[in-house]
Length: 349
Image (tube, rainbow, N blue to C red):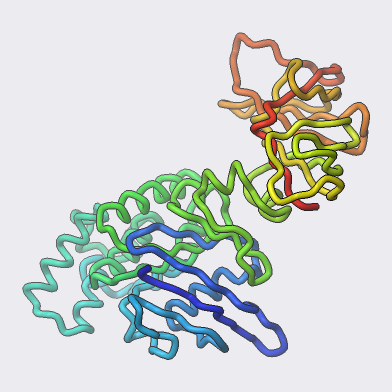
């Protein structure tokens, strides 16, 4: 492993922000730290970068202990949310600041800057100043400044937060393509689940300073292991109940089927998690009677918000692929919902 955190602790005053955090980051991967505000994700990034001192545990890089190593000595670079560009320097001068401080050979430094500006698509803007650039272009300058020093790891602290939705989507794809091209380890912090899914090789879901679940975007989306992950990572219909047997959950909607309930014994209080797109209209292994309360057309998909007939307090969310020719139920109409048991996940309540 390229980078490892072993039982790292961080305390701010009376608050233990990270009780004991361990994580291994593979060389060359795009790893995202995902969680709500206060989950500890930025603290982890600051500890890796050397901007905060650990109060326990160890941080290892390529087998060497760097826990007490100053930030400027670590072979890492950071892209901050505010970009922190020098307003009096051109794009090329901003990008070349790192090699200048490192006193690199001028010829080599110029070559590195030229290559980096080409990678981030800013060659034609090299003589412009930050004030003359768009938000996306400034973000690319900040990335160029991080890349040009050829760091082993690049740390990104919510660098897309200030961008509008369209530009943000463009930059998500751009960052992922750039990471694959230069094959450098990226550690990315965000609270945006869609952003994490789009960009990451693996995602660390954090909650109150602890690692809730680690896995690929697909693993986390389809197989959450805890209530927090099921509720936080994407949308889920969460239905409370009791595990009757490994293949059925007793709920206010009746006995509902599941494909597997690993590690849980019959009688356990559980939540049945079903994604909105896994629910469909019609009969099947499950039969849930519901009334349509609202219909929201969203372009590629149409969202139905329903009230369960046998448990009026329970609302259900269904996403159907939009089809101009398809007939959509009307508000107030009674329908039957079903799902494939393989698409249902059981987590401890």
